[in-house]
Image (cartoon, helix red, strand yellow):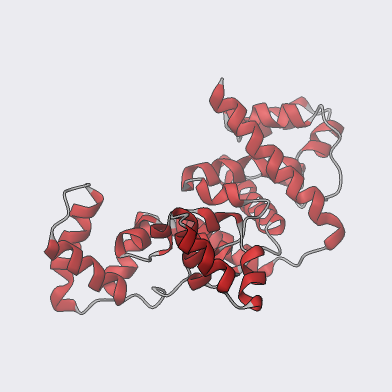
Length: 277
């Protein structure tokens, strides 16, 4: 991960392409110049993107995390901080008092020093950090369908299939049907169809949801800690806990990672195509 100061300096010099800026670049020590050439693509962003402000930190969090932040400030000031946070969420015009209180709120948070998102190098799944919690949940619901493909292909019991499809949303049903027409191999299913149809619909849905998060966690093996931090904090807290648990449990099998990543990307592309129609 690049140093924040280097990212800020490069973006600043690129934003103001004056001859003096080029001279600064040319006068940099060789080791810094070499690091500049290896900076991530986001280095060309607006310099302001690298300034960590309270509003930027809050905008990177799902609202379900706000309670944790408020609980971190002294009890006597919590009501005033909570009012300021409510006004921020409602989009009310900022006031100096509110800016101060939100700054105080963020400053009390132990995780306030997390590097800014722009310091994270681009990766195969950078698009995940642009998804909201609902989109991640939809993605998880689709990758879980990979566990059902081979079993559905081999099942001739119509009653079992009807029970299974009753547990699935319409988009899950569409995606499962699409997968049935594709070669799909590489990751073994951990769900037994016969066991699944013996569960209540809610239990079956929860079992598939857990498996979807397991597949997501497996595909994300090797992503940087900062990438994972931002992804977890974009999610509703119960989602984040479930994904974090899977990330801590999942051991990567190098030979299977390409297939897992391809399945995650395919599910995302399916969702995007569906949204555009």
